[in-house]
Length: 276
Image 1 (cartoon, rainbow, N blue to C red):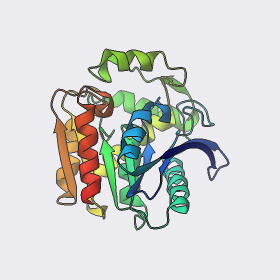
Image 2: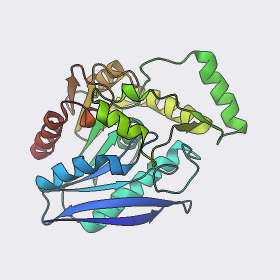
Image 3: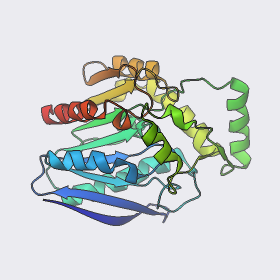
């Protein structure tokens, strides 16, 4: 019997973060989700359901500036604040379950945040992390003048937002999913100069600092992802070494959990979590 409830977390700077928990009795594990740019936790309902069916509880919050959380759309005052927000979510889950194995799961921008979290923060409470199509590097490297321009503007107008130029057909091979994204009122297509420059910088930072990892990681990426770089994910996993398990999904685009092999993918996550 699962139970779904909404909750609100108050971030360190007072921002209200909207959250949802999908709980089962006596779970064998609990997973905390950090979603991607422009989206929200409602898009992971089927993931939560699958995990609940397999005796795993699931927690998630909308990132600041996303979904039903407060904050300017597509903006964060700093990347560190996103890591602090993750800490709030983990503390909330820990209060619910004292000694249940706890995993962090991040997709895309969330994969960037989770990768940074496990390399920079105290991970004693975590059993492992799942990193999906992370933004460590972009599939199409932006020209350096564009990056420098964003850095310059970010100093004076950090919250200036622009379109993230997402083509919905790059999300998955499933047209129904892509159209639903397009018509979803809680989805937005914005990114601020501060969020772009800091996520870009911190993604590259993770590739140089893999020696700081202390926990098991499951990292996976679709080979046809035109948004974030599969080769960066592979390099990240290889540099982590034996603590990392890497899966490459042939023909799959940016959102493996929503793509045509999603059942196989969820089974793989379950297998890995069960093994740890």
